[in-house]
Length: 315
Image (cartoon, rainbow, N blue to C red; front, side):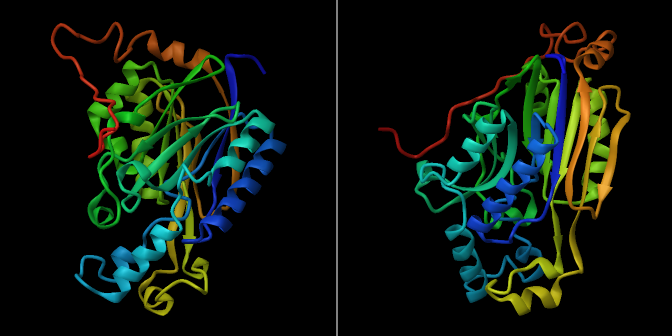
């Protein structure tokens, strides 16, 4: 391996739903498996720890003052990830031990926003075990707004790994043109797209972003079956009675910088899937189109990014 090549991995797994500690153990085990495959960059799905809020669509999540919605939200908050409490510390150590960088989807309980509102966040931990950014999803989609707050631009940052430049987004914010453009301007050539788990989301946009940005795109989704709901889930019977057999079928995939498939979408398979990528392929495609370089017109259009972490309190 050289500085211009990278072994990447897609962790297509299911959470131990709404159980932070057991899902963290599963993530740690997955990192160990990836280390055996000599993976240098490992990407997980959206909100994997402790899982996606499937009950919203199944059980009337918009209804006011119901015990089901209150108790499930309380359970969700109790199992969310608190960075300040060290919930990711052991994962950081594993990344350092294996010299592996990861993008990890978490549901973050934000101390800087009062410690009760949740954010769908994407954490980047580098190969030295350092937590370098927490990107909070800018706009929760549809019923997600019932449990997640709106994020900010603080985590819109690029990261270096060997000679590559990485960036990551959650689910439908990958559809936001100006957000994508901010990453192109930062020189991102590996775009990591984290999804809750559906091939219908990844099969088109992965190649589109790759072609638009002349970048590798790694889309990673989680898995979830009706049988995966733990027995101690609040209102389990109500949830399972309305749940389809498959709630998240994966669809993890990788597109080359020319928009072709490096790894086609993988559905309904659990595991860590690998690929080798080369920086030279990025350079080849930038020869005729560079969205923020020779094919940009900053005299006509420019983009402003606010990276301030938003809070109601200034101390």
